[in-house]
Image (cartoon, rainbow, N blue to C red):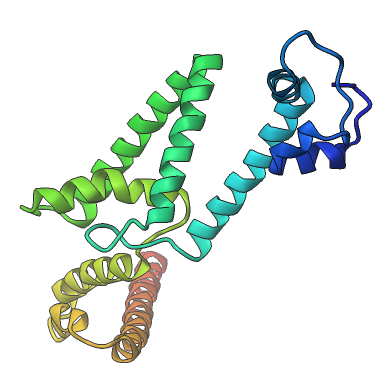
Length: 227
């Protein structure tokens, strides 16, 4: 195949391979049969390999964006979707190709897995301690940190867990606070109202603590001035 072949002809032949048997692209004469020689010259050309890599990379980006924006299902048993499985397999083939060409990427993936597992273990231990369900534990340790890489963070669960901890702290200081388990049984609108009420109560509590601190400091200064 001649090196000055136009790009649009290559793209057309790439998507419609039978075009290579027409006169649209000029090929060097070969002693092999017509069908075999033209097919081999076209697909073994460096420019064809380059265009193929570029096109497949754009298709991968389109599939990647589609899965993340439109078809990213929740964890099993609801998900993952078929497109997500295809994306996983595609990523696996890319990783295998990188390992075949650059062996250093294996060490990067190994350390990435270690970091993901370390984060998942810490996240599970801090937010969901004493959970006897092994299936949930493994999904939170391995699958959820993987989702966090792409920004899939369960904000509602984190807010509920933090709210649980804040109520446990406030009940120690203010026994009149409602039990935190009531918050988890409320709807989104009522929970937002209760969280607003909680923030106001905390501000009042901190203001009162600051007044007590200031009064104690002023009394201390008075005693020091008398002495």
